[in-house]
Image (cartoon, rainbow, N blue to C red; front, side):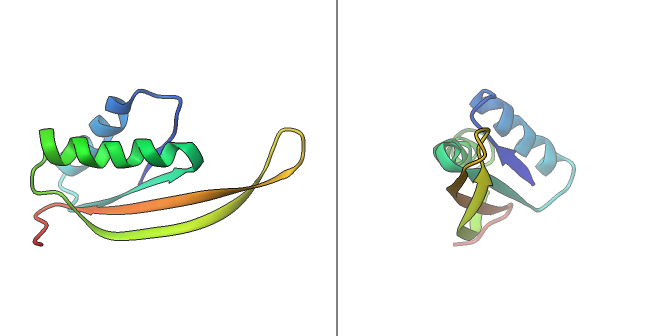
Length: 90
């Protein structure tokens, strides 16, 4: 699983995915919450268009999660999990 956040550059997540696939894994999960969801989608698009042409999405999970802020208040965040597969056949 690659957990996508906003603090690191986009290419760090792309490199993590490439490394996992190069180690022989056939699938991995990109997980993002809140504003990082856009970055997870960009990671997939960059992987597909520039680095690994045979990668595809086999499963999408859209969910929600309640986290506690630093002030102690509950906050509901959207969660997206994208399962990527190599040798994907449409």
